[in-house]
Image (cartoon, rainbow, N blue to C red; front, side):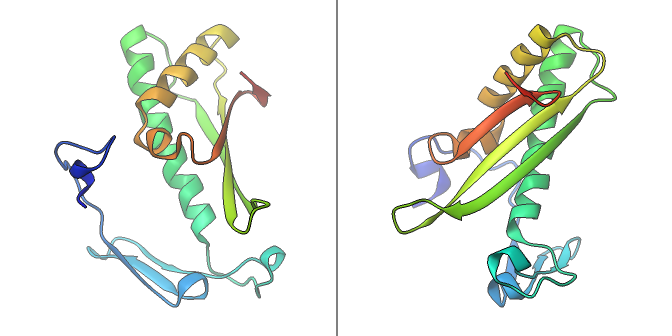
Length: 152
């Protein structure tokens, strides 16, 4: 079924990323346009050899944080708030669900010296409603939003 054909899907694709992976978590991946090339390695904490490669959780942490911060920057701009020096510290944890599978848990922690806690909480909440990654993961994985290390 196409993305537009399922509940919550898109009505028009503005951009489509394409990638190919060979060898799974101990393989190699790259984008079809050649801009991204990564070696993959299973972390030692998951029983792998570690090594120089990245892993899907690191890639997801960067992608989610970038998308989320972009949504937040758009909201902040509309509200006249300055987030130019802000940063998102993201974590993606992987582990057993307790019922036979593996699951993820995400934390997105906003650090912005120019914001009050109330403004930060409002921005985080609104960005969570707008961000495509948040919309894709809502109800599927635990996502914790924080401001300066404290949950909102």
